[in-house]
Image (tube, rainbow, N blue to C red; front, side, top):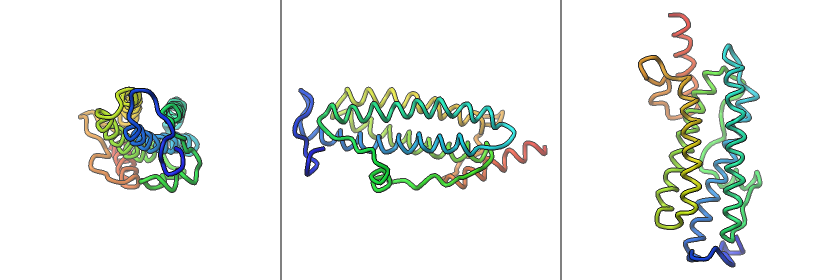
Length: 193
């Protein structure tokens, strides 16, 4: 964005005030996708346990796709006349969520924590999509496509957390640590049953 958060220009057919709000929504999505692809890579590096290779290999395509979302979002911000901010300091300053809290841990712990992470990212995407309904359908379409992929990735994560009856081991968890513990406990109980 230009000085004062005002755009000097925007795309034809979009009011400046609407474009400024769209840019703000997109910057929040840029922060979320940048954080998510770094978090996913962190999980890729730190996951251990009997299902290591399947989870390790499942995560990398998600990293690549989400990194691509970041690029598309940044380019859309620029298209609308804004200036995408992708610096680490700005991300940390502007984000409304906590740092990913799990280090070296089992596949189930990371998958449990990622269930909570994906819930937050997808919910915030859906909120932005709803608001964009009255602002910019082109940007909304892009975020809908991202959400479709994010929901698929979330399903991949949840498939590892679901029992044969369809219940998630992380059901009701509200934090990464709580979800990680629940997923690990469920896996331990299943292994000893």
